[in-house]
Length: 432
Image 1 (cartoon, rainbow, N blue to C red):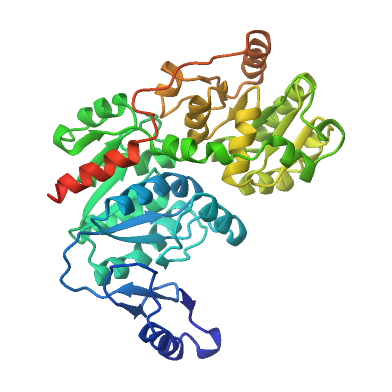
Image 2 (tube, helix red, strand yellow):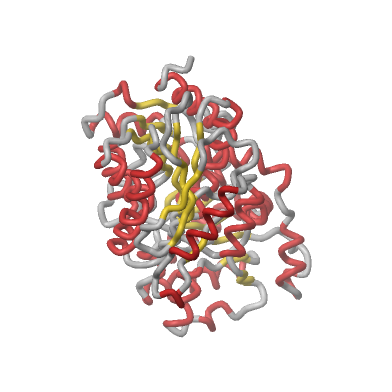
């Protein structure tokens, strides 16, 4: 339960806190929790009044798991399941609110069977500096009051680095899931987040063996690094039986060409990287390329909010105005799984989708100059084609002619990465 300070009290949260205290005294706690009693937290810089556990002696290690953006939800869900099954830890889920859309957030949590966050910081959007700073300010008092034994962060978003920085400054151990991935492109904000988070983490869980070599080059002791597999694939395999067929998406959003699955199939695309969407010239070139692809094969384009804003701002909407190019709002996880599984190929600049298409055996064309997930190229279905229209169109023609790469599943991408992480955490705390 979260309450925000009433604006009419000019920020005085005493009345709100009093109401919360009364609710807490009535036993408002997560059903079945073994956590100690909770108390209201009144000093969040963002005005949230968040219930947090009182620090007491406890027999089980307390883990704080931090999420901030939709890819984090997908990665943390199997870890939560595995840790709950182990029944050896007190768990606390903190949502920073880095990406927060109420409707989409609820759908993702339901589809992934994630419990409601224990604490929601509500930081919202902003520049990289503003957002990272806001998460640090908001999570510091939470860490102080709850005194976790370990903070678990996933991926490479701003919330990942922010939570890790506060934890290390407070002397709290850090586990980084998806450690060691490198694009070797310091112009990517995510690359900075990856490198810095790895440098201050105590336990580093990797998805591919190349990540271990990257960490060794950066001076990180091998004893801290554990090759466990890919929790994104854990979620994919767990959810795949419930994936929504693409026909359902077409029924809701389309007519004409997309009134059913087109004869000959369809392609799917996603686009959200700042390098691709913030520059109007780059965005125009990619949208024109999508337009050309749609002439060869109908194309479905779920529009990221950042991309949709840029298209409108730069007057590029007419480039999407054709019957065989279907644009839809951001889609829930199960809908995206069904869309990718049904596509003949996927074009993307998303790291997670590179992994998911490899897991699904669907050819993927990555619209970037590099990838931090090279195993999706060496083992999987991914091909890095860059953003030059001629190269993209040539790769599309090759897929249409040959079926494209099918690849093979990388080592330990077997749906059990989270179990391995839980096992290593139990060993870390000497529980086994």
